[in-house]
Image 1 (cartoon, helix red, strand yellow):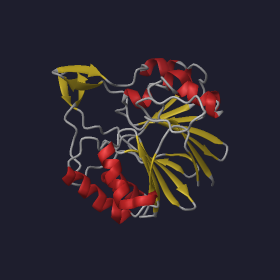
Image 2: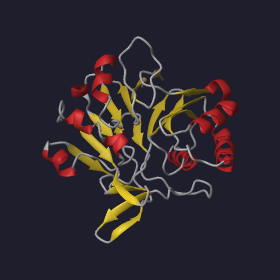
Image 3: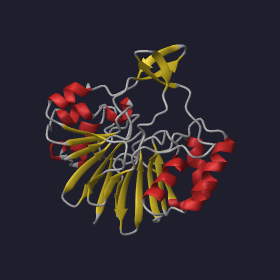
Image 4: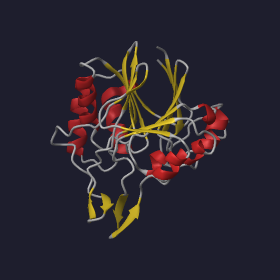
Length: 277
């Protein structure tokens, strides 16, 4: 199976001469045989424009996978629903939970801005699973990711609102998408809220320690300490990926640390990047 991955939404644009837009968000468009898949949808500020510029028809999307339930990965659902009411939406059972972020002592809603009932009411097939699911030949979700190490700790600014009040969000809905290519596994990451090493370890266990060829997406390391970055790079070294394309929430310090370690295997992923496997 051949795969073509186009970065539809990212925090930065590098291509000149094209009217592409950047936003704080992420979306990958994946062509897998005759299947058309979106992994995340961005905030909804850029997806329609970028799809038009890049020649991507959102009405032909057959599957959408959400890495987790934050607005910057799910807001673009509205743009897709405006054009397409026949796709299947995959996510974790907690993806529609009421997610909030604590900022300056107050809580701000940062969850999915499109109501679950509105999505189902459009006739969308909603598939919520904790376990790994094959959504197309050679394309599988990671399922819920276990927390196994002691250096990828929780994120204290994220919370859930429920009937009992506000509680810390374990971000159990965070998941990756895995492509089984002839060169090895390609792991697409939304924000890696459960930890990039926890995620890759989970993928390795799930897929029988097959070679991880490429890692693409957000690593959420903008506020990581030097000690944490060192640990992550040490463990990444063991996976020995051939390609590390990062952006979104990775952070400049983390990008530079990765580039120093993996040199020409690392690149800053931007809107319009196309990779084929």
